[in-house]
Image (tube, rainbow, N blue to C red):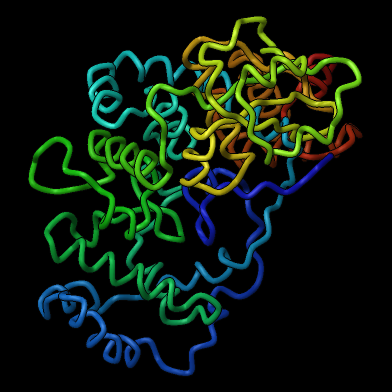
Length: 412
């Protein structure tokens, strides 16, 4: 089954969303405000002052500001590529990302251990989240994916009628952050929707959940210490994370198992599920048999999972099952666990870093420029792959650099 996967919290596109290619259509200035931006800035001033923003800060932020009207098209854009669930997971759990995650685990061992101790959130889960949100910080200020946030939020607050109240609140939150001295307007670089830093905080998260974890007098998502600690606190408090529990695991179902039991609603202990014939897919015993979990079968014929409270704790950060499963699987792979035992329907194994680099080098040499040969699959590689698929008659021409593309490249 093929579907369109959306990867950020409701209304948002963070780094994970920015890395998905989008077709931008419609005029950049497709806003519906009858008031000029300058008049709107003057009228919005009392709102900011009532939030406690100083006159000086408001003037510093808004005087002479040019709204980034290109965000209107991005807000309305439909994803250019659709992905089956297995493709979505494979791309986000890439060999490059797993290797980088293992490197970060060693580099940040002390920080991750401290966060795990203070908030109870498993360090590998946090590594999976860090990798999903910003590729471990690689795209935090990359102008290819990120932009100044204040002009974007101001444009949305001024001219986006569908969710204007939301954008107004986030612009006000950003001004409060600046007023507190945590950031300069120029420091605020993020997605078109305003998500920023290593774990892609919206201003509301930054303002209300952020922690000055390194004790330097300010809170910022642009430092791993504050970003990871604040996000762990979010998952622990808002997500009600259970210290010591795993998120769940892939399981093997007995023959002629009733699919009705995989309703993702009914809670049973691991021990009760085991009595029904459900076993861990890797053959290991259930470590905490009394924990309550639900049975979930994302796609008929694909892998099945028992999922507990910590699955939902992570999902609170982004209410998408595809995002949550990919994030948790990435964390497990960084930990050293294996890929899913059961493939998704139509699925295939993840390519290695070297195999993806081989595809990129070969396509670029043939005139299908991937704009990089680092083994990372972003929009440029997907566009190049799709053009190659169309050229040689590979169907579907979905832009996914998988085993079929690798085999055809080698034939060529």
